[in-house]
Length: 484
Image (cartoon, rainbow, N blue to C red; front, top):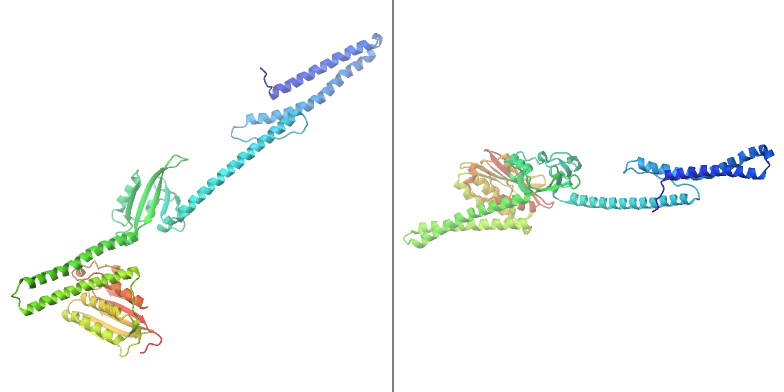
């Protein structure tokens, strides 16, 4: 079995061969000198005998030096490989020459260079594909409408998308990195928020919560989902958060519950009255004519109340669907307002309310939907009558104001609290004031009135002070051709 020589043993063999070659040359020169010259003259050839082996050694040294130099260069490069750590790259250098060993060495380096180039190309392709995947995933996450965050178990944010920065009112998603998610949610004012959030962060299982940011739904409702995961590189636990603002859905749900409660109350009371008086008329024969008329009037009034409620519901439904149609025609505004005043005057008289009406001598020519605008003004004056105590005052003032016609309804009633004034035009809204609970109402009149005014190009405003009164003002624009 043959074995390959190492670079070091190869050098030693070359040196040994060189010494043997020199000794052989010396021996050969002595033999030749002895055979060819006379003994008497041997002394003359002694220098020649010394020069011949030296010349042989010189030539051999030159030849050997070339071989040893190349082999030494290869050996030094191989020694660098053994002296460097395994993960450190060593640079090899090609050699000049025509010897087979040099040609083999240079061919080996070319193959290594080709393999390195292929390996580097593969790494670049893998990095490029990974970068594209990461970029695509980041683009998708940034485009989501839900807030997405990756945090440590304790809540420190490692990644957040743009939607989350909007939810927590941060300028950019990058600013959230390193912050704790808990205080950013800003739900400390909500009922039982600390307990819920503590459970949310302490729970090791995946979970979904709905959390109010304040005590009221309109202050914000967040649907928070957490999913546990493990970082494939570090093996550490991570938490993926999905946070969505569901305030509108919560408000719709609250509105639906309010509608069911309102409809039950609004329908039950008049239906019960109609049923009771109708049964009384049917069962008792001895009721005098005046009582019969009174019962019939009550039945008619309750039926009218039901019809009005149904009409208001239909109007609101049409408003929400965008199908409420307005039939705008040039209207006799003076006659319309006269009908409105006469419609609400019985309510004023019943509560002994001083009803002060002030109208201009002339009215402009306006294109109105007569029925809907009349209903809107009746709603405003009817509310003034309902929420003004007996003996109070209601003023209905119509006057020109700049380029518009202003309708003002002012009362000396119970007023509206400041924190509720922004909500009075909401569907189904009713004040939390205990004095309002005993007054009939369904929270739809002002919603309808605002829609009617805005559809006529007008503006409805409100000024109110609790326990002092409320003023609603409707301003309609007057066309250039409107007469005064």
